[in-house]
Image (cartoon, rainbow, N blue to C red; front, side, top):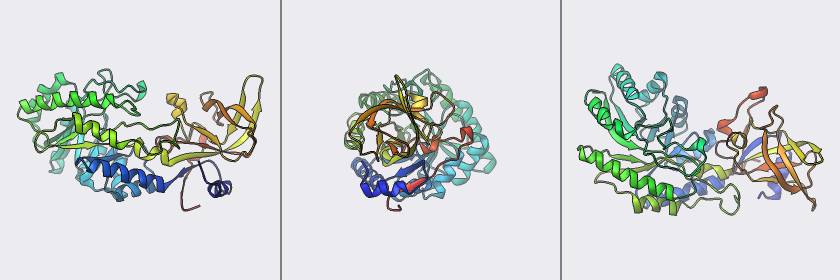
Length: 385
């Protein structure tokens, strides 16, 4: 919860805005790095979670690499302090222009998802007189036990190379002289809270790694992606994810071969809890069955509830009423899906109250839009208000 002096500072600011607790961010980054370093793992922050420059500068200073899924993310990562040789470029649909951007920066590697993509990167690299280091992103057909929209490692998903393609891929790679195979890459989904999913991934990765070894191919990088979830229901009780248990799963179940490195790509787990969307109540509409608290933030600022039916803890941080009332907390957008939460129990709420929508540091600002010609809102940072 927020200190009173922070709430008083909020009252003086135009709403809505994203509030970032940089102290919490740094503490989370420190714990994750310390726990991963115990095992020699290398971490690449997934920019798709939050690409705010202040957030990126904080993360890059802590020694993290970057996981990017667009050419603009590659550029922004490097502009904000990430070492190009710690940048990986993922994504099922890289354009020629984006590939050229990454080739010019001489990044660590491209995580490649199809034979055709390999051929395109080879041709573009040849045109530059360069060699591109690549990892094969493989679809392991492992269930992530998460929302279907953010599951990425099943055969029905669009991502990755399927095992029945391995022979053709390796045969073609012999002819692609401007590619160097340096890794195998996997990613099964996001907001994973059941660590069994990662155990199952490790078992499958071991099988695939051994298959490649049987072909006398020993990639240096084994990248198991990201996906560790956070506690959206009880953010104050679990501000920092259990990174120790997370990394221990890989220590216990991954069988690396000599000379191989294990890489991971956390995103949400690092930044989600440090961010809140602060919004002001514009109107209260009391009905027979439903009371609405209509706020000045909407799905344009935080689309997760509308897109995934995702839960975020919602708190009225200014009301001092002891009376509790259930509200549907909604925004101003002309869509009935513009709803942050239904039947949210809050102190009696009135026009002008401030509401905090918690755990919004991941996939809030990066997914914001200007639908209804709304302005993109800004970030506010702890220590600066």
